[in-house]
Image (cartoon, rainbow, N blue to C red; front, side, top):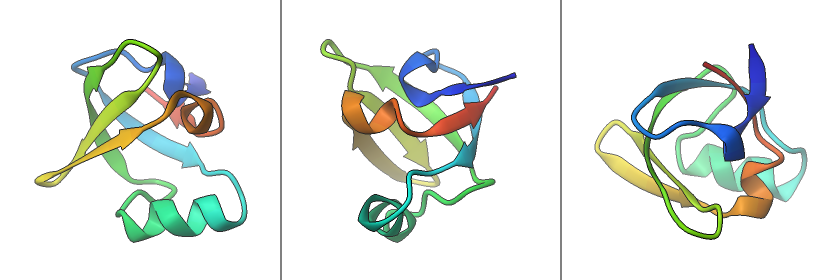
Length: 73
């Protein structure tokens, strides 16, 4: 089932299906988040920020960007 990252549940592994195009995609790829990669939803903060864990790196994604990232559970 595909959904957006802002709806990811804390403590679950998710697969990134689609990233927004343009500069945002490039920046996410630099952080190691690519289409098809599996990441762990470490935390959901007030205001909608989602903290992801990829390998040993923790990455905070703001709510507006999280709404543009398509994921699968």
